Image (cartoon, rainbow over all chains, first blue to last red; front, side, top):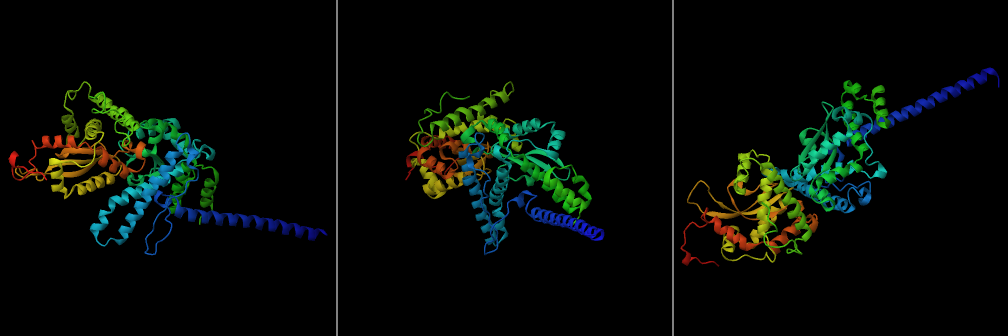
Length: 291
Length: 226
């Protein structure tokens, strides 16, 4: 081949490589954009976590029991398989069944009196469904990363606000042990102030009632620990940290901030908090290549 | 404040309806913890010598409960609860209790339904009660009736001016070891096998000192119970 053809060939090669690279980048961007769009619709808030499945012929949505991503016995010895099975397949299932019943009654209700009278059933059972759906994701066996401490922005937020992870755990344990009767202890996020908070809710009230995004919830209803720990709730609280899925907790922080960012480009700079991993890449992509 | 053993029966006397293990934890750990914590909270204060009823109503503080409200309430409620059950209990009451239940609920079965309904629908932790109440507390001459009520956590109907006659504990610790999540089964077992109707009768007698149950005072020799 003479020099000119060689040169042309090399240029074609270089050009096609560049095209190839751009193609890949375009495809990656499209994928990331569609992921954030679809994920942003589905995730990001507690309520949206419980994606309703199945529209009834009459036009209202019912809910079904979400699967656990681990076996009932996978959280032993910190939470027994017996408790997990009862908790998931009986208690959570009952909340969902009763919630669906209340939704059906709501659909059929004709006057304000009947609608308002369903309020407590919807609150109790819907709240129970919301809270437990978050709870199962908040837990993971050691083999899937349970108990490994938080990384990235969440870790730095915890150490800035509480001093250390141990201090946060101690605070949540003492607050959780002091809950009277039935309820939950939460690590929540004030998304306006970008501030972490330890809060409690009574019975099955969801944390969104207090205006916070739920990150990590620990069920302190007696059914969550009684068969194994009996009356010693503090032991249950001490042990559950071995199976807390910090990746899920971090993800909730990130998705919350991504949702905020996708709503207003002006706050994008505040979301560049050095997040690692794919979530950080997506944030970077959104910043540099606005949709 | 805590007695050496549960109200005249041993911890395994209520088997198979309420297991020894439940009593060991419910009475031996939960109830005992409430008593110990209450004693710690009132030690050295002027509340120390008070009667439990008075202490409880005082701690309610007209809707702004003090820190020892929960412990006082739970101690009172559990004392009342242990007295409300006995081995070989349950079944149907007789005499005046049955007469008033039939008068105020329609039938004994209707009362059982009402109690089951209240106990099952008490969401979270709480208690279901049979209480005696004046129908119109402001009017001296109106007669009283029996009602079923439910309360949450440590609350009991004393603070609403009722006179409690019977209670069932529906905190999960009361039934979880024996029945797990099946609260309705626990409630049915309680009603069928455990209620101490003798003590309910005695409490009703005491309540007559405060409430007149009949719109007409009938002399003792003319009363006829069905």
